[in-house]
Image 1 (cartoon, rainbow, N blue to C red):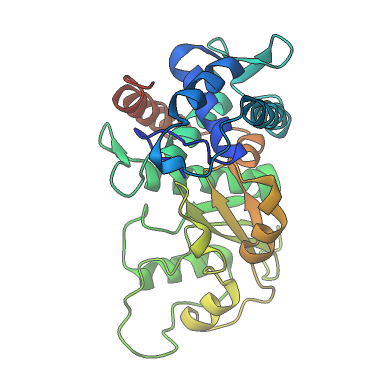
Image 2: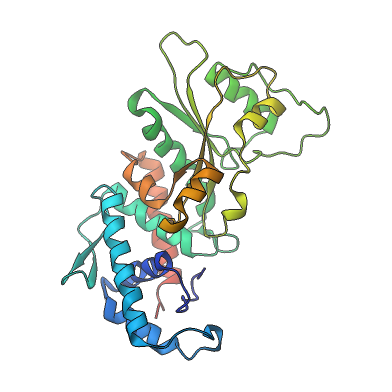
Length: 309
């Protein structure tokens, strides 16, 4: 998995090279399959790439797959993809005139995938990882129920003691009663892998409703986290009463998931909201949140792409 400012090797998977050509277009306004072929040709002799076939035909086959992936992303974003394929599918343009909130969100998700979000997540004094929790709280609300749905951030983007946050969640949902520590030992959890909650309440205000518990991961090193968020275990450990209906498990990533691993990822993590699905269901972003997304993206781009290839 390549991380900026480092670049991908020819061993990179299709979805990584698709990110690479998007970043090229983001910085240079336009990028082509020829640009990527030239780049791959420059680094074929790198010692890190021992075993890579140097044959130009192999690279061209890979580029066909990459451009197909770009086309798939355009469709998956529901018409709000900030890039456009031209010249019979060999050139990608960054659509500068497409400045709606979905396009801005896509660019933020792209950068927060390819930056090292352990050491390089703060730009313009905004933590890009915590920002993702805020984004998901709003997107998840649109996904589960639109105007009738509600949501909030539970994770580290929200301050406060864990016990207080659990009690506040129970009160908002009308389920679970209040915080209860099943083990009785010291509470070391900050969010216990729960980052955002969304639900669709009924007018009768009775329990038994659609609730989604989401875990959020920026960057690319998230596979070991699949399955860590267990709604049933969370409720049994931390609330004094059971929920009448267990929440749905949702796993949210900034990366555009490799299609060849899609089914396995959903089985392990629950409903998967990857980059394109997040953009597809982001019907709106509150003004302050959109401003933070825009500010973080601009600062991150200026710092990391200014010397990009």
